[in-house]
Amino acid sequence: MANYLHPTLRLAAGAAMLALVLAGCSKPKPGEPTAPNANASPAMPAPDAAPADSAPAKELPPANGAEPAPSPAPDAPPPTEPSPVPKPTADNAPAIGSMKTATPSAKISVPVDLKYLFETEPLPNQPATLHLAAVPRVAGANLHVSVKQVSGLQLASGPLEVQKVAASGVYRQQLSVTRLATGPDKLRVLVTMEMPEGTAFGYFSVPLTTGNVAQKQESVKQR
Image (cartoon, rainbow, N blue to C red; front, side, top):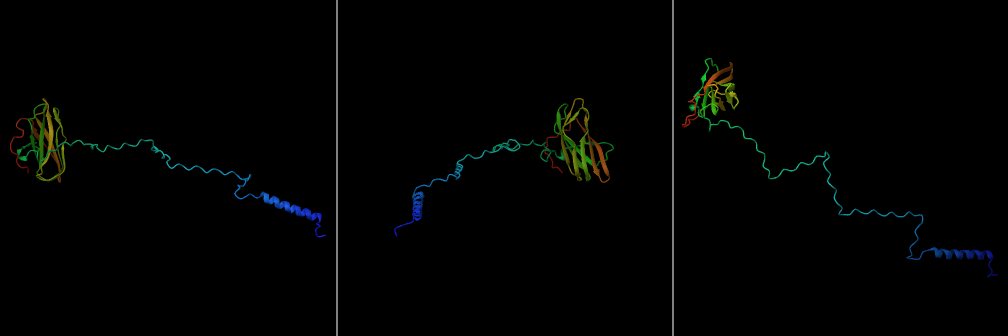
C-alpha cells in the first residue's frame, strides 16, 4: 500500500523533474558569451578624435578688403625738409656804421632812420643784394618797410614787418633787386609805424647808381 502512488501524483512529480532539467539546460556555462538581445539598439561608434598635429587655421584677410601697409625699411633715412631762406644775421649783415642813410621825402612824418647798402654794383639786368636797416627813434608798433614796385624793377623778397619795436633798435631786411635797362635810377621805400598819436609814414629814396657798394674795410661793431 505504501509503494502505491496515485496516477495524478506521478504526473505532477514527472512534470516537476522535467522543469528542473529544462532550467538547468537554459543557464549558460561559465565563460560562455551570452547571446545579444535582438531588441537592443546597436551601439554607435565613438567619433574619431581630431589628430594632435592638425593644420592651424588660415589667417583671414582684413574685413574692409584693404591690404595691410608694408612696414618701412629699418635703414630708410628720414625725409628731409627744404632749407629756409637764410636771413641776415650779425655775422653776414653789414655794420650800421658802414651803411648809407636813405634820403627822406620833404614831408616825412615817421620817426625812423633808413640805412641801406648794396653788396655788388646794381648793374642793369643783373641781380644785386640790397641790405636795409630801419632804426626807429622812438618806440612803436607794427613797423612796415616795403619797396615800391615800379615798371623795370624786379624784387625777390617781401616787405619787412615787425610787431613791436624799441627806440634805437635795428631791424634788418635783405632782398635781391634787379634793375632792367629801362628801369628807374632809384628805389622808393615806404616806412610806416604805429605810435600812441596814430600811424606815421614816410618815403625814402635809395639811388641805383655807383658809390653804394659795400667798402672792403673792417666792420665796426653794430649798435
